[in-house]
Amino acid sequence: MSKTSRPAMRLVVYAGPTGGHIYPAQSFSEGFRRRFHDSRIDLVTCHRAKSLIEKMPQGIFHSVSYLPEFGLPGGFSWKTLKPFFLFPHLFFQALFFLWRTKPDLCVGFGSFVSYPGMMTAHALKIPTLIHEQNRVPGKASHWLVPHMDAVTESFEGTRFLQAPKVLYTVGLPLRSFIVDAAAGAKEGTVPRPFTLLVVGGSQGAQGLNAIVTGAIAALSDEERSKIAVIHITGKRDHAWVSERYAQLALSSEVHPFYSAMDELFQKADIAITRAGANTLFELAAFGVPAFVIPYPHAGGHQKFNAQSFAEKGGLIFHEESPAAKDWLIEHLRHAIEYPGSLVGFAKAMQGLARPGATEELVEIARKLIETCENRPR
Image 1 (cartoon, rainbow, N blue to C red):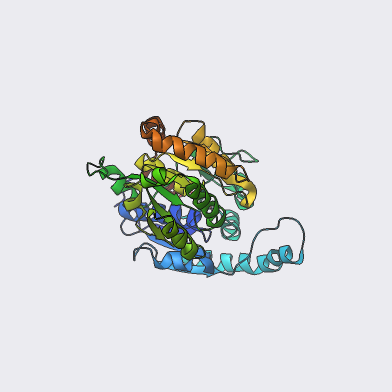
Image 2 (tube, rainbow, N blue to C red):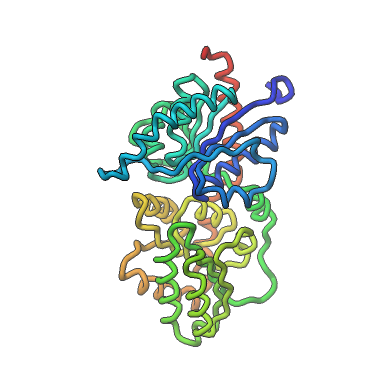
């Protein structure tokens, strides 16, 4: 079916409030709008995502709706009872929203935000598709998977508790400016020092910042003279990390946040990072190898993300622990002394890239809409 032979398609996209959920939702929506210019996409997220939404290019979403903050239950406390009081309201709100927007497809990108809307869409027999970013899904994805018409995964072998009806491995949809920059990236010819890119991510920066600054301080003056550091700290740690590097007379750029990450990936010889799916697939797009210390909380899912890439030679990782600093010192010293040792890591990392992930996901969405068009509702 050609895109000119049917009415404009309407989608509702549900995504959690962090970059790990919002950025893939943005990437998919950009890709869908590129292919189907007259389509309408409404985003449902929560208030914590507002700062990320405001930084996006205009015109991707027809509307953005913000749900109240809540989490899905884990253990028992008065705090975990909050979702049970909110759920009736959220399901009723989802029912009214879907009745009003009449989408051809609902697409979920994880987190608690997606659960009421995606389950309501399932009950209304609206076609449903979810994309799971991590090797180990969160509660919402586990609960949704058996009910969805199709499920897509970033990492092959995602540990779903129940088998999806239909499963596709597509990789992680990356924002268009990242994909375009990676496609046009060339090896630098201007001499520069060996450059470390340190990225903690929006939630896991503090522990990583302490480990990295401690490891760099433990290097000799001669070793530090051979390197430059670009460090994305998060707001909380920006001042003290900047001061510490100044004390060490280190060639450094320190930013609380940096939106044009493609520029930094092209400068980096190696990244020291957490193991969020978005970060790993962006590094893979540019072939940047990594020393990884996974964020230890949020169910420990980052360890399994890192393990997936480590098994294929793109990175090495160590759990956050008192031994992590010494581990990092050892590997930094070796990389500084023998930068050629990273070539194999870089090639393996580039082999893990999935530059066509967005287009694959868009095509799956199109086929699902087409297949379900005549399904009775």
